[in-house]
Image (cartoon, rainbow, N blue to C red):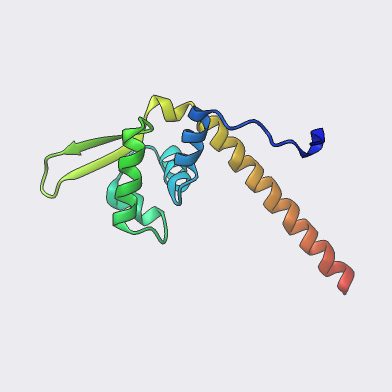
Length: 123
């Protein structure tokens, strides 16, 4: 097999597990909201993530809490107040989220300019 056709080395197990967790549907969106809004109660978090069900949000938050990315604070009030926030571990990744946000805005602006340019040429 020629060098250009060789398969890349297997992804290391810790990296594979991290990517597997972070790429699950809604996970990055949940982390993004918590990174921008700070500690947030469950209901407010669900309202900020359009389209997610309570069941799926609960499942994702449990997974993230289990891995140490999110903490859960329970207040025994009536009704109970449950607040979620990012742990120190997740705050270490916030730089990557900030970079993704920066790139998303940059690319959106570039795409909008390209569309305007195409429309101007068509006229």
